[in-house]
Length: 336
Ligand code: ADP
Image (cartoon, rainbow, N blue to C red):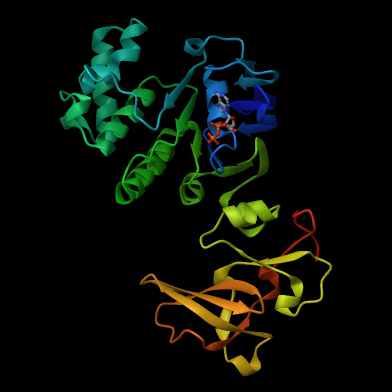
């Protein structure tokens, strides 16, 4: 039985359809990431599960029991917010123990669980500080601890890393990944960041305009995007989308996709196609060439030691199994 089930849910704000018949499930112990551009309905999904808003149609179940008629406090979920939402006047110890205190948990048990949680998150030394005396990363660890200590059936994470600087985001992302493995917790994690989605998710649900475009493992989403939107959203730089004739391919497909790392630079005379280098971006480990062929541009990933100059004519080749074919409506064409 899935631990969290979101079944045919629709939600509108006046004329704006925020969610249009959305369904997904998170299995017991799974970290499911909802990813998509701003406004696609991610936060609405979390708010409905948390019970912060009503909706028109569908149902939400935890462990097979419908929870959408229960008040938020009875839903057995814990939410971690982007802005931490800690109580500023309470110490870290009091912030962590607050939920248990409200449930009239005996003080000795609160003390023990606060200490266990602090240890799991490496924040033992911060227990007597107030949130104002913590860095952003420390605040977010406390916020995660406050959710963890309650041992909820389902955790909801709403862009928890977006207020942190890039380096700390990567550190905390790794910490969350290992915490998830240790706790084996069921987590629904919302982000607009596709790298976060790819690195954290057991599975990913890609959303756009209130609809789920594709659900799958990071590998499935990356290697078999079900439509042009997913192909462009997951992967950086984005997949090249080209008319078949640009690749000298005879195909009924409207567009052919190929990822920058699947194009190989070769000698211009012996290649299926040639292109002209327009710009070169060297990141240290990789080099990205933007090349033009007719009026289309494509990006090629190559090694940073590649010897390339602007206006060079290069040859390009690829393995046919790395091509993605899409029809006029942008849907993936299978079996070509
Ligand atoms: P995301 O979290 O993916 O950025 P949201 O779930 O916040 O997206 O929003 C989905 C859609 O619903 C957007 O078009 C947004 O403008 C709209 N929306 C969200 N909350 C409200 C609200 N309280 N009132 C009106 N429209 C809203």
